Image (cartoon, rainbow, N blue to C red; front, side, top):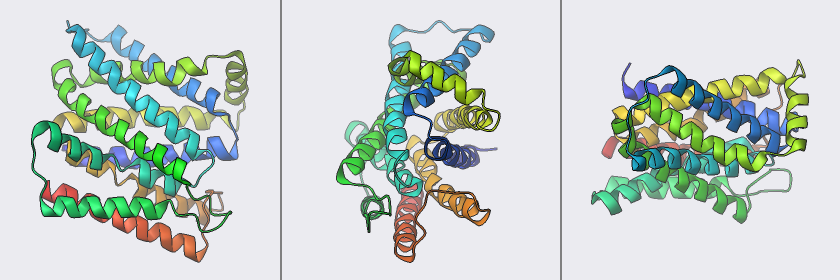
Length: 298
């Protein structure tokens, strides 16, 4: 299996995880703090297991700091995304959150002296306007994104872009497994530490011990761990900009998943009115077309 298939599989798993996260935050109404506490704890646990059962290489201090910083940046981006996902439509949130390839290419151009071709500039324009279109609110029931949501989601996409470039520069020196472990430490710090409070523990325990709800949060974190490992393998093996472009197709799978949930009578928290559905489809086509152009001409 090559890195293209690995990145695609990671994108599919991430989409399933995002849909489950939306159910937890919106349907089950679990507060953000206990949710992030569990996510941070699972990442720290996975990191601990890796360090305990693998040979820890002798690493320079700077490599360790870079590895942990990847997780801190990614964790902050995830926190922002979760806070907006709880109250907004997942298809709109994902479209903008997955715009990180734009920032990856810009940073590669600035710091690696890569030239931007006409097709790449065209892909930027498509993705930019597609993301803006996805944020448009038609009415109060559409759960559209306001300007604040849009700016925060773009900032979170920027953080993921920075983290991806640092991960690419670091993972070959420390190895994929330890890159995952250090990233997990960073995510654990960002998500777990701010959520350390007695009320969060109580709500989390109550949720985990609920036989109907507990499996949701456990499965979503196991899925996220698998997707994280796959994306690290893909970034290590292939060009980071193209891998991120492939990961940017996640909104497509989220959109498909939302339709499937609706067909089976499961609330997907989407407004499927004709106008809103048309906007989402046009936005999806624009962003996906931009990502495909990006991957073909990079």
